[in-house]
Image 1 (cartoon, rainbow, N blue to C red):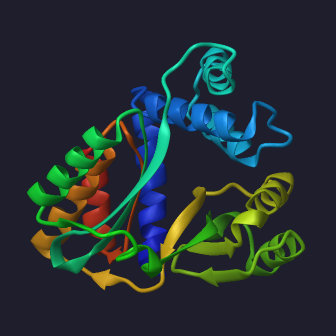
Image 2 (image 1 turned 180 degrees about the vertical axis):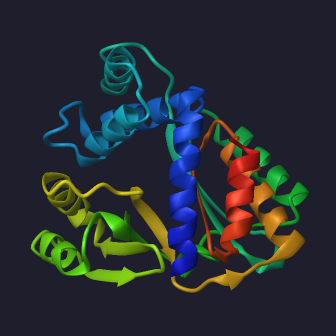
Length: 252
């Protein structure tokens, strides 16, 4: 899973860069609004809202923006009606894509996603064609210089983590989605900073992509993520770290 951890770390750094430009605010506001609509405005009883607000704070979103988004979701303020959607498709080299979105116009978004995939060397797939290649997990990437493996193991096991593995410079921690908050809280309480912490779709197997094909895949990811209605893009590629870092530098 090293390819996924490298990509998770790169995405986290890219998100921090985007946040400085305010680029992610629109996406997070939609996330907060739909979470509040589906589960109410109380973060103590709505884990999805709690996670969305956590992401908003990580992006330094002003509190009044967060409060307005919650109130639009609960109906206390007038707002746009959003729905959650997913799309499945393939990119260059047969890389599988699973795309999550929140939109006020499903027909428009469907046409846009189909067009982006087509122009990027891919195609839309039918429902169920791709999602079985992924499994939803809580996923944490931690710098090895921050904590020893034995201490990290002691911190996470009692919180419900199911797997700890090591790469060259980082640890990967995985857990069931229902245990994500407990593991995150345990890491926070023990002062363990994460390079990346997210609920994500982890590929069960990966497709190795190199050279120009790798750059083409990353351009497709970028184009999908630039769509205002797209919340998350998951793909099962394994791309060399130097190409991932080059892509980050070019888009910073």
